[in-house]
Image 1: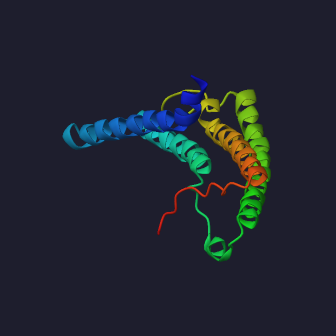
Image 2: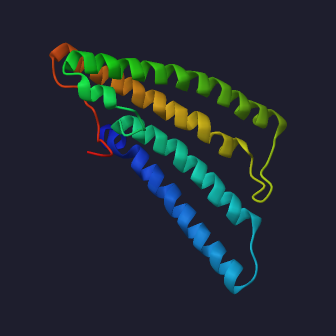
Image 3: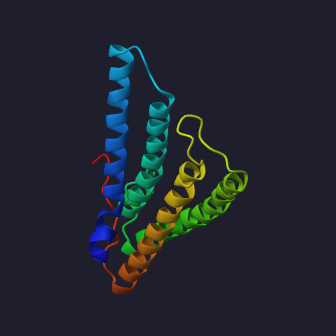
Length: 169
């Protein structure tokens, strides 16, 4: 069960938020064009579903090493050890940024919780929507730690480093 969750957690979450976004947007277009009526809650659902899509998608990209990177230098490095060390350096820098981001975004969530702010259309606590950022960075931290462990294992055993899929080859 944990293996299945580890492999598909982001995919299922992305699917849920994407379907929610598409269905809500389609309903709102029909309501606006056919019935000349629109609602504020539909716009909010689409906006917040898209925010969750972005942050969970970023964590999924970290897992697959599919995030944007300039990998020209990797084309000139022959040594597997040097490539692995560069990937480890990149992961460690990203880990530091993610830890800082979790700290500051969590503070925003706590302020919203303290003052009880709600969204305009749905009248739902903003904590649920603001949680997208620390949740996304938390997933990134988890995936970065997995990546660092995998890279250290590959470095120790001499296996080629996992480079992920390249966008243009």
